Image (cartoon, rainbow, N blue to C red):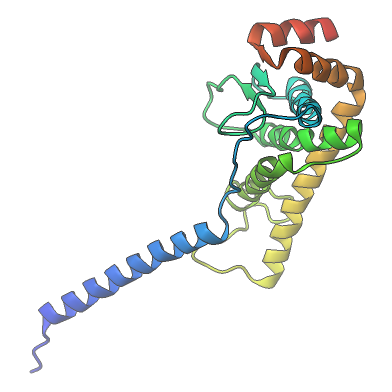
Length: 224
């Protein structure tokens, strides 16, 4: 009869589990270092050139947010720099906790609308869209890989611990790219149809710098 040293076996298994857990933690830390979110250092003061680009950038976000489906009401627009960004468009927090695919596509379009407005109205793009592009890429990836909203992949996404084969990885990348490019086209449609509104809002922001919810509502009511 063979007597197994169970205490030793349990200790070995426990040690292996602890080692695996530590490896996972170290891997996550390493991935955060590799794919860290873009750093932002607020400027002490914006130049007139910066302010003009920021005004059109935020106006692009705001106009798309106002006219795209399933977007919450606008709460604040500002071109005053803060610790978070050069400017900002803030919406009222949604009461619902679930988001539809249509709502997420609208969100993607809004994220891309700031940079697109710079290009369409000022014929140049700046580095101010770094956070928007990062957020749009992450959102599109989540839509495909977490929510099963990709056109080709659908729900055929294995759990994170299983590596994707080349075919499925190609489908995932295609779906992510399609979502982002379709969202940009949607944003371009809105901005093209509302050119006068974008220009009027940008000029208003250059004069006022910050608009609250009531002022935003009055502006869009008058814009039609």
